[in-house]
Image (cartoon, rainbow, N blue to C red; front, top):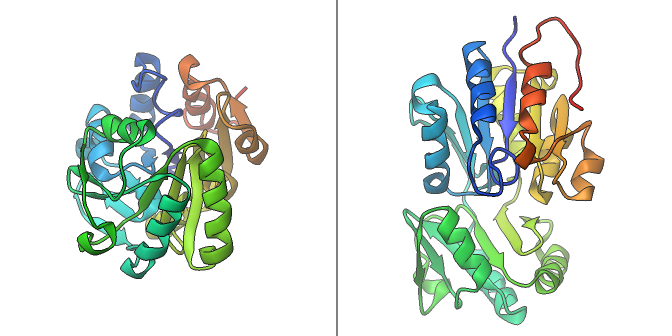
Length: 277
């Protein structure tokens, strides 16, 4: 049996609305691991916010991979080796900060256990910090105070403002940076060539896996690229409509163990062709 790779977004896909992995989903994932398949967590979250999930899945012991910051970092959970890293160049900070101020958005980046904010934190930013179990630190001069390596910047705010900022940045910097929403209230900014789809492809090449051996599951805008790349792209029932349209399969929601039929039919029934309902 050739091993397959299951790539999972975390929020809204692997975890339910209470940000928990349900017992049924956890049991199915353990069976998948026992069968010799590979689990990859692909998230916009920083490594600190993903660590709690890798610990629940015991990826440090059983093996697996993390695509943090939408793939700006690729990590081997078992060896803790950093397999890939692409930074967001500092020269873009003035333009990004100005756009955030113009559209009344919070802008922040990440350093260790801190989210470093250049503007006052709104409720969406505080939510992001809370689910990643991090602390928010406000700096006076974002452009000059952020001297450490940047994996991504995140802008948060009211959906209308986020949409307008996305449109503006795509027009001015779309050919130079990765600019895409993960939620209607989150705008992700990464280095050029960093998104989940490109990062899954990069990891697959490292592991000598073909697209046909890869299943990608997600629910957000930033999951579309990996869903389109995968041999089988899966959208959760709770996914955005545009995500469902990009998928080969739509499964049940994250609150109804939608990953379980995907795992059972695409990974645990050897020699049969199945599709998730």
